[in-house]
Image 1 (cartoon, rainbow, N blue to C red):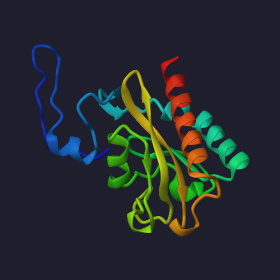
Image 2: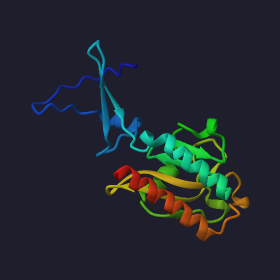
Image 3: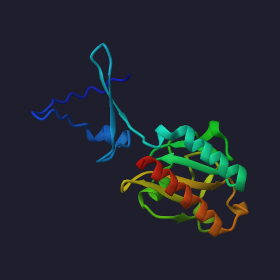
Image 4: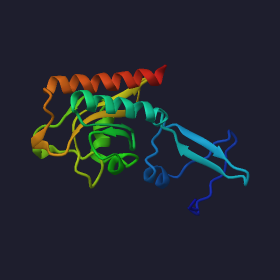
Length: 182
């Protein structure tokens, strides 16, 4: 654990303000859920909570099934990092922070399709895979993550038709969103 040198007081309602610099660095947004941990030495630790992260094994199985049945490389992520992937290197993508461009796609809350080779949106910074089609996972009205089909070369996009790719990604996002609500 790393000390920041910042000290905050608890107000009369038991609240403490997390400084803006830390919220920006850790990508904590208004309304984000935080999990609270304590230890025997009296430390209180706040950790970003990821509902999709709780379903990592299930998400990985879903991604693997999409890849095996449709030969469509897929990533499933929460709002910050890749949770599961299939058809691309798990070691290179799983648990890595998503790119700022991919994050913007998720925040728009609507279906995204790449338009030509000039608009390649990387899944994570410094990696080859780019988003081909993406649909945010929405649960109880909140964006909790995203399902995206990916390609490593925009000129060799998926052999699936655009309509089928769209329907598969939308179905996966909708299904995962429902699982989070249940």
